View (cartoon, rainbow, N blue to C red):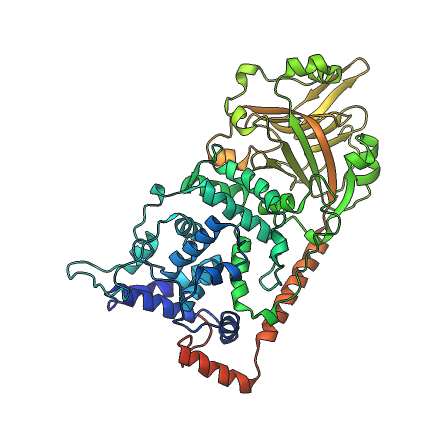
Length: 558
């Protein structure tokens, strides 16, 4: 029988837990047993707190690198920690945050630690996090929390865990004034907190807050285009489909509390090397992209290949700069939406010619949702990940089965290839197509052949069209649209291209090397945590006196 089953059995065999105080003590003691002795020693060195020491809002936000100016975010983060501190009694009773509660919050912010702690592989940490972010907090009048369960009630700890203390999550929501800074903070940490043990920068890391807020707005708009509030369905649908890695930095910054300052190492990523020189690929946009393509991005090895504004908007310049890269790459297209085809074509004869060449959807076929998803004031940003090198394909296709289109603005969604090769680079006048069939090109006529989900760029890299009309093409419908039962919506947006960029990514070898380097650095940090036998005896006795560990503590799970 697995470990989860043994934990569940242990929980059910606790008939003596008849008060809130006993429940909290039981889970507090379980929390202390989830850490190694060196981790607990480093935690105490970091915080200077014993088991029952209280922790203030100012301390929490300083340790977790929350900007001082963001009052609402500071309040939200502290309340989030406070809810986790009181786990599993998260509905009505909230004690103040103490050291043992903070340790419990570290566990619950880590999906692997959380499931082991709860004793169930099916436990949903994302639902717990949403509750902790949205729940209104109250302080119980009895600070000892000693109220007993009445004699005619049946105590069912398993039920408390499964129902999140009988909370109706469908009744909860988070307003945008809280959610937006929270998402901004997570994206910022994606840049500056890539590992569990890296040194954090000073307040200067918040200088780019506005840029990260813009990226966070795109994710927020994906949850609710009205930007008013977010309910759990909207939150869960978006996170699990288009931004599955967005909570990773929360786990990492919480794990920082298990390292003394002297055990932290220099941040392995240098964002000052050429990324900030790009008009499109800013650190904020890369952080947003990594929420969707975390496994594909090897940020050590990003290489600028082709910049339309620098090298010229032409297929020849594109080919000269991008085709030498023999590894995965990302194509970025940024443009301004063309709202009125007729009006713009009267002013631009080249666009009028493009409209004759591109098969248009009938105006009545386009869903009204298109106006909500592509507001005129927002730029459209699309990223196309290719696992194969670029090549000329006037008849064939390339790109690899892992080809993925990520819409980054004005909302975020992910569109994955449904077959092996779905891209053409046509040098005889066809431009670039993702998800299209090859265009028909004759001496006197050209006709594009867009797919059901497709991105089309003309040969001058001046105009682009992103089309989404449902299943049946070589690119799957948007993951978020499908989750929201809107995969067959007829959506199309035409744009005047403002920027085209291609960035090279490291291949599988570089990714493995990067992961090995990070793993080595974390092992080194753990090694530095190991204390010689003389001092470990002294430190251990201090921890026992503080109540953080007991005589039978092994550092593993109970």
